[in-house]
Amino acid sequence: MKEFLGKTVSSGIAIGRILFFAKEKSVVTHKIITDCQAETDRFNEARECAKKQFDELKRKASAVVGDADARIFEAYEMILDDGMFVGGVADHINSEHVNAEYAVKLTGDELSLRFAQLEDEYFKARATDVKDIADRVISILCSEKCENSNKNFSDNDCICNSKNDGKCIDINEPVIVMAEELTPADTINMNTEKMLSIVTKQGSSLSHTAILARAMNIPALTGVDTDASSDGKLAIVDGNNGKLILEPNEETLKEYQLLLEQEAAYSRQMEELKNEEDITSDGKKIMLCANAGGIDDAIKALEYGASGIGLFRSEFIFLDKKDYPTEDEQYEIYKTVVCAMKGKPVVFRTLDIGADKKADYFNLEHEENPALGYRAIRICLDRTDVFKTQLRALYRASAYGKIAVMFPMIISLEEVLKIKAVCEEVKESLKNDGIDYGDVELGIMIETPAAVMISDILAKEVDFFSIGTNDLTQYTLAIDRQNTRLDKHYNPHHEALLRMIKLVIDNGHAGGCRVGICGELGADTTLTERFIQMGIDELSVSPSHLLPVRKAIRESISR
Ligand code: PEP
Ligand code: MG
Image (cartoon, rainbow, N blue to C red; front, side):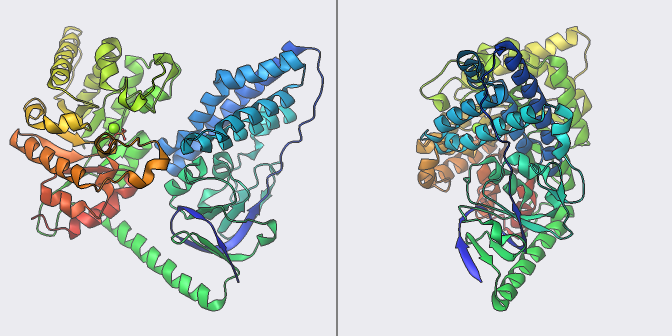
């Protein structure tokens, strides 16, 4: 028995045999070429092919982890189109007369080094993504056939080594996948149903593979001294304590089998909660809703018996695109979500773009402080063309179900009055066009300290408040939520924040508003009873948190 320490990126316990995933990289040879245009064309064809493959991976990933997490592959497609990548490769081809494979390798190495040198931990973690993208383009260039390079997309009932010439390693039992490094594409290309856990040497908790592991709900460790000699050996992954136990002795194995059974019992208990009501032990009904980024999340929300969608992040529709989505395109998406929810309410949040969420076609200027900058409702109230298009699509979709619309990043009464005036204009224009729409409730996100402090005034203007604790924490504690170096200071349990939540609930209720929480804190089960005792009406959490929160609600006393 041997123990290896690592860093937990996803918690839980797994026991099984190790499958060591050895990735064969395409060998890149350096050639001097004469026809630069032909080489650039080869590169562009390979790039297009890679995009198709990432599209396919996104489709597969959606089925495994839901729409929001599957968007990783959209980010990949964006890098494939990014000027730094495309221009970098073209420069190498044209100035050094090198073959496309070599030019992609040079550019991939340069860009990934640039990312690795950044201070921000999140961007540092993107270095692996760039390398992964470059490797894929290289492997397509080496195989030269787009169809063939797709051969690693196997639906066979086995785990596939994606760079193993499409050969599958037949296994009949679930495995712990161990690798030096595992990319999201490697992960999704495998039969994820047989993946018990992921253990790697490289990678961070912010890597996309870590995000996938958490979404798949399997334990994952990184920073483990992995070794091909472990292949086939029995191991325990203790994702709760960051360790891998190789060839455990009988006593350790028994101890972990017991823990695993306890975890399984907990999961079964969760399953049983699917059809239970969200009622406290003393009989108070709480609206437990789901946060969603796409149709898959809506389906999960229904499966887990959510009361509705409490936050639909509509910006994802815009981030997916190369240009502004049209009214009809948006309408189709909103309508699909509303119909999928079968009469349960859906709260659509209008475009919350800016800060960390950027779409090139908005041509947003670089800002020193993007989190405090030009984002969300500030953009919408300037770009009323974009805003009205979205509102028209939402009102049209309201003819098919129960829709509410809420507005992000509010700081003033003036903003709310302007929004209501725009909504009236939109309704008027629909009436003039003879288009049906239903009753749409209007609400605002309370995610700035300013909105908290004037929540008594704002409550008179809207139907509901939804507290965005992610941003409210960052603005209250003056801590950039993207800066992982500040993680230890980012304390959403800070008394200042809890007092703000109480104030918003009281002011909301006094003004006749329903009050919910849709930020991450809503899923913190250590606070569920406290929120309920404060008077919260609704909690909206990611689909994977619905059942634990339901359990906490059912164990709470409301006063
Ligand atoms: C929030 O700020 O709490 C929130 C729900 O919005 P987002 O995380 O999308 O900014
Ligand atoms: Mg927010």
